[in-house]
Image (cartoon, rainbow, N blue to C red; front, side, top):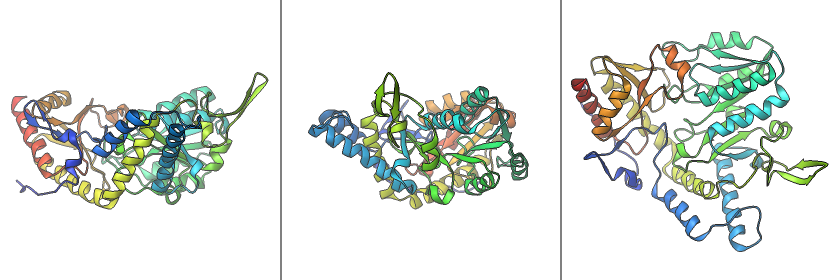
Length: 409
């Protein structure tokens, strides 16, 4: 048996949710891939907006509206700087990653997708990066093809290149980090290969944005989508970043207020970027609080965050591997802070219930990756996902709870 390690958490006291007990046990929150906890500064930002600063944005000249607009647009600037976007208007606010990908699948396909064309997505994709492309393909008579993976959960690069050899490939959509396996995909290299064949490349960045530095210019992807709630911000807020030339060509995704220049019954003219893709009243409080989350994350430092989370996932992998009958699903060479596993004689849902009784929160199920479950011939997995506010004691609690579950089952 390996000895216990002492991995210190960062800024743990900033997360009030961790200062509670579940079923008589201190909470161990290991469901960070589903959503991260929210620091006090984000909670206070939301409270302050609704208590003192409620107003619509982009529509009023009174003080509260003007202040709200300024704060709202300051978040766009913060996102631009975070991901190194060359143009502010390339940052589109959405409801989340799912909404952002649907926007691209719907609008991009209107311009670029023809009958018989092909869209490539990997086996490890979240359903949100599969189903929108299937819908677009069905409308256009196109085909969605699978980029297969190996037993470790890594892209089979020779098969990917083989699929790219078809002149009909118009889009490749791929996760930066797998939400189930933790695999970190070399999207910079894969985007380069796609571009060499004349295809566009979309990155699902939901699982990478809070755990590593992202530079969309360096990646040279065409689109990058992510959510605020997976990076310490509110739910209901997301971002689509896209290259300006593509976004300008794409038609609006939804119609309504803000996205128009002039409306007549004879015809409507649409607004410029980014408003063209931001119809209706947005989640104002959420977008404003999102900046607080970004500032908070950057104050800690993404390098420090990555370092702690890398230590945690390695320690967890080592300790879990020592449990007899436990099999880790996804052992890629390059992994983020996610560990999925199955245990002999125990259904993942039963494991999740027993762990919950001991105050340990994990995710069980197919994690919206059913094709991936089929690839590994399992109906579901248990998943522990780590964040910088976790520590080695959380891992030890997980291992202890799993051993107790093993005894009960």
